[in-house]
Length: 191
Length: 181
Image (cartoon, rainbow over all chains, first blue to last red; front, side):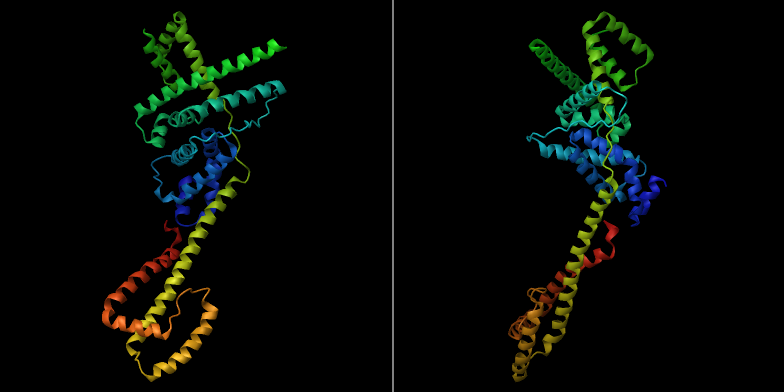
């Protein structure tokens, strides 16, 4: 069944098909929330809340836009709210989950997990407005026009923020690399 | 080409919409400019690390949990509306009864007799209903006071009652079409 058909049924009071819609977009919504919040439990809560909000406002959905864009908009708005509320509180980052077994040795696996953790830490340290754009563009692969619909900002602002976001991200990652190198050399020296 | 123009080209590269001539210009510049080259490599590295982050699987019962949340929301809204609506209907009926009765109540001997039966009946009723309808029973004494007030200001008070009842009954209307929201 087409998305729009399911949406129409839900608006008419038949929610039986809604789980199908959730199933189609849960990966997008959950991963967007997960990368923005950096924590599995919070992401689960936020993405479920996002779907509840989507359900409640289905009659405000404009079929001229892609459903995925609209859903991401609701999700990022909610996540930004959560991040704002979280300000000042230190929030624990998760262990990285990487369930794909690609025949890596334990060392390679460990290094990969460490690396993902570092990248997530770098994303987390970005200011919220840059974080959102970096995740949407580079992690979720949304296009500029989709991001314009999600954020409601003009393209010049988006380009600017993306530019700044990449710069900060690059600097943070370089800094983390230097730190881990100095730790490595310190342990080597001790040995 | 100047280094600040090159940084614009780098962003175009990362956006994925760089033209071939622009790419050539970028590469040519980077061959001779170490700082731009390092910058470019670091940016590419940072972006590719973000792009390489794996997709995480949501929990297996994700849909069920979403539906549970949606369901409990609707249920809560409906019970609240049901309570308000029923309360509204009850009080509406009650005051309609008063509306009809009050002009016939007279302060005579019959009232005393009625008062005896009425208070006995009310006490029994109160035993059963106090918990449910917290302050609806009114004694006949109060009824007479009410009558005096009403005779003085009949229309206005009744209009105010009607207004309150109508607001309460809006709850009922919401139950009748819960999907409207």
